Image (tube, rainbow, N blue to C red; front, side, top):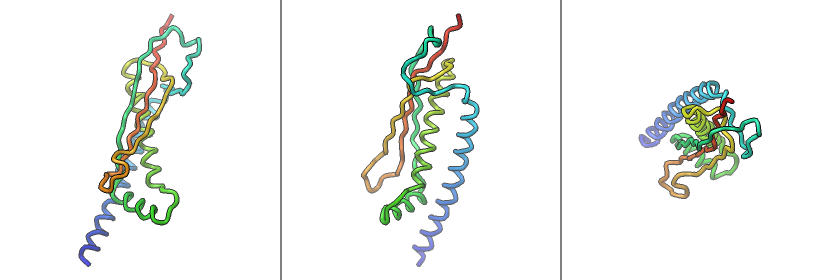
Length: 150
């Protein structure tokens, strides 16, 4: 009985801290997205003629975010019955947005006005292992464009 109570307490703590940290991360993301809104991240690989002449450099943003114990437990239950695992959807959303922000921050440091040819790669860390942490890696990369004033 003690083991069950301890498990439920740890589960509740995992839920509480996980929710708090996730909300705090989303607030940070929203604030930084607003600050970096002036740097467009564009998927097309061809520059319009009005951007020439320009200087270019490669920029990238990488992030690894792990899932908390509560979400891992709930996703394990969801695996039994099947269906949508919404707890992992927020994990991937935060990772994707954070990687894009880090890429844009690097572009700003290099004095860029735009980021063209934006691509994203995702991977699951320790996929298929039973003792895995349960984390996702997202890499966003593109070509930073600094237009030359004529």
